[in-house]
Image (tube, rainbow, N blue to C red; front, side):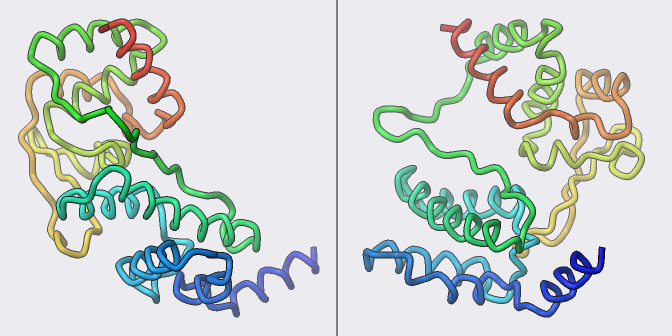
Length: 219
């Protein structure tokens, strides 16, 4: 309709950079510390970055930077909360259609730990039932390649796989070149039975459900 066209034209004329949007709504922070956290976050992302380009990959890259700099889980959550607040404002103003998924850190006594080899096998065996078979595939390939969830979900077999070599494409500023990973026999077998985009259809909700199920069963 004409009204919709007018709205889209009006939106196209707006400055949709995260810096401009933050300037609109920074008064919503009541505490100076939270406001400072938000300002630092916007600076890290880049004040001219379009809010429409902030997706799960951007968030993954931010988290990786924070953790590599020694940020605690609670600190990461404060930064994620600031980002979530900005994205909520953008969604309310119809600058974005939906907010990207944000995975929060569990604070308190919880600690990150790695699977032992026997635990890895047991965990994958638990996921190998019909309900979670796609998550089994994604997890196994992730273990073999070291790729992040967002990278796995973007795999295009026609573009990214050449024989045994997997190319991981990245838009990360400090790592502008793709990574090349030799696939294991297990990963090759999994990918050979999948379609062109093997993991694109695995939702975060289904992945979380499978992991919670697996952790309970693993004990």
